[in-house]
Length: 173
Image 1 (cartoon, rainbow, N blue to C red):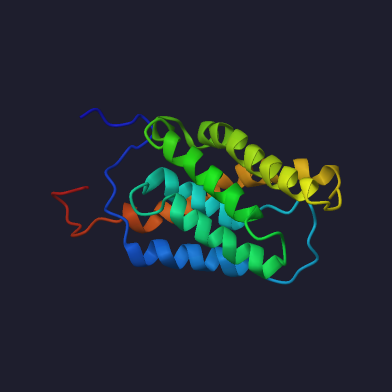
Image 2: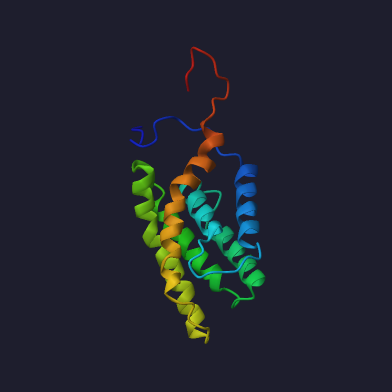
């Protein structure tokens, strides 16, 4: 099999406990009661897209829907608003999972920017249809910040998979 150009090294399998831990941490960070600004990036969306790209058989649309419902309940939003946006985001990430590893991290960030933008537009449309208030033009900056977080998220979330299982001088993998 031909290895992706950007991969560089073989990765260990992702630990399911680590995947769950990162998703729960991202959920808790999104639930921190800070002054919510429209341009604030959604860390849970970044982590869901990351695991949707790198582990599509473990984190799929169902998990995105469940986490979206949890965010809806926490924020007091229309039930299903974030669930619909996260489900669409996860579907887009899974559809990109074969193509995205071939690019560098910054090229990947450009590739996932439309996904984040579409998810925010979908949540905004649902919000406006039910009579919500316009959050302002700052909402268009959130997908840019989320795409800017992509290289950092990739480096941090792939770090446990990069270490060698039994390192020695004769097996550099």
